[in-house]
Image 1 (cartoon, rainbow, N blue to C red):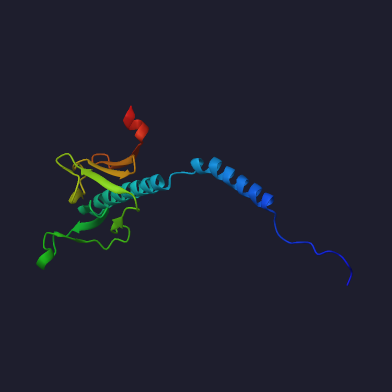
Image 2 (image 1 turned 120 degrees about the vertical axis):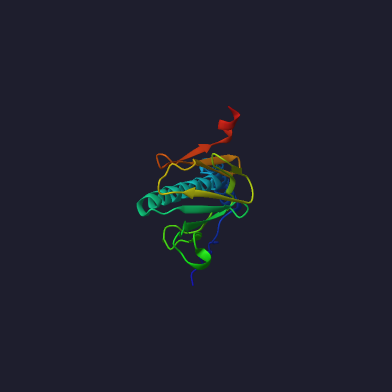
Length: 176
């Protein structure tokens, strides 16, 4: 063996401090620029609901069916039913679960709430609400407000044109 001193492996306290300082500085700069994940979830929930309503409106017109969306404002969820006018027994003239693979029950993402479901004749802010999509269109306009923190998204359905839209209302918008 030769008489070389062994070098110590590892980092000095100064090196670790510099790395932590740089990491902290990057967090301070980057974190405010990241999108608000709850707002992103709320927007995705609103888009999903608008797409579902548009799809059911098209299906109602195409297949001559009446669809009902049952909203549960406490559980932040919905279920889809189809009118079965020629059914027998308990379902005669009532609504049943639809077998359509795209018309499935849904739940909003965590942190997103259904604040209200409004038609021309009523507005529900709690409990259960139902909206109907008929083959003829021309039903009542629908407006569903989703809330996430201070942001809100309003999903509207115009029954005469069959068009759905999503509008975002931020806290800055409300202050105006």
